[in-house]
Image 1 (cartoon, rainbow, N blue to C red):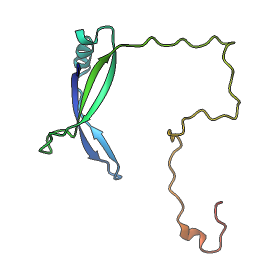
Image 2 (image 1 turned 90 degrees about the vertical axis):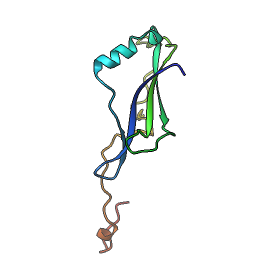
Image 3 (image 1 turned 60 degrees about the horizontal axis):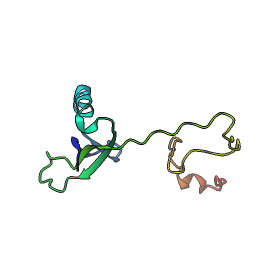
Image 4 (image 1 turned 30 degrees about the vertical axis):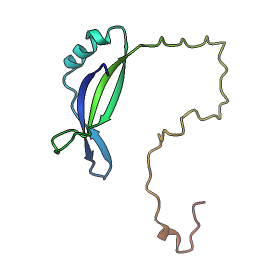
Length: 120
């Protein structure tokens, strides 16, 4: 693989019990120097993350992050204003996997045991 190791990532747990990855990638000057290197000249950049199968201590990262050059594809130009059809106004264009609504705690079932109406 032709690429440059960017950083290591460690698994962490948030105060609310969620899992996330954290690591440091150096200074902006370091990143610029990497991306201006000969192997990236005129190319796009892919980010690859690999599990560190050689980890033996907690001080070693759980994952390794690499920047890898790839042939950049030219971007497609947007269609002219009159060429594109507008979608129906009632269409939701948010991808299903994106949950952009704030999460709300569900109401406890006990609140409805006193004979109150269920919310559906």
